Image (cartoon, rainbow, N blue to C red; front, side, top):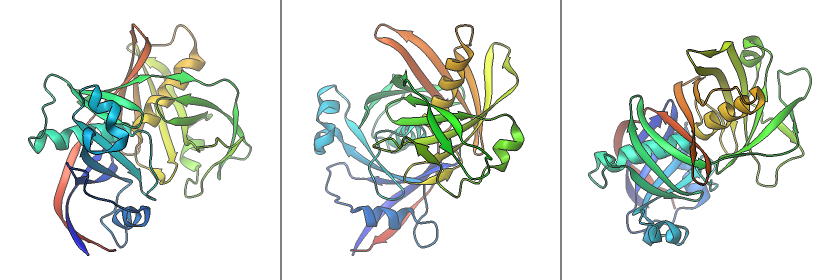
Length: 289
């Protein structure tokens, strides 16, 4: 059995086990990752961030060619691979900076399975450019415990898949039982994170849109926050609101508050996510075979 050094971190309550593996020497099974993330018999986390040089992992070849030294190998709490994690990118960048492995000051580029992402400092912590986004055509029907009838959901892609459902008010949002996975019809081939949102009253305050959100993350369950889900939720409400909708959003989640910006770049609209990143403690753990 191997003993590994780890760090625990979180972004608005979305928490991660961080393992430094610069040379790509670790080969962790899904079961080992699930054991590390288990909240009863492991360290406990929504997912695992493996810190590996892009050149040391086959999936990082494009990132290495683009000049991104580090690759965020993100795994869900059940061990499954995920394309991206918005909160995870900020925690990953904070870890690299605190460990003296990289600097954020001029913008830090990291590799992910959804491409290279750039993280910069922001007033509320750190901001990541999630890149291009798109609203998918066609509704997805969403059934969730606590909702009397199925609701239509808007599919949003921000490098990973989301389905966003608008609810009538705070009571519906608070009454959801997300201990049970929502059912999607049709079910996306790779699954999807499911967000439930309620607009503030009024929706736009001082030129900024304000919404509340809860989320069920695929491979995890309900989490206190989901960075890409926050971005997807703001984008869905902006999409529904039409041309007059603002480009700046505040999204309140059970774990705190995050910011979303939509900016026009040469290749199209980019969505940016901002918020805090905290490293909680470090230690050692014995990994079962």
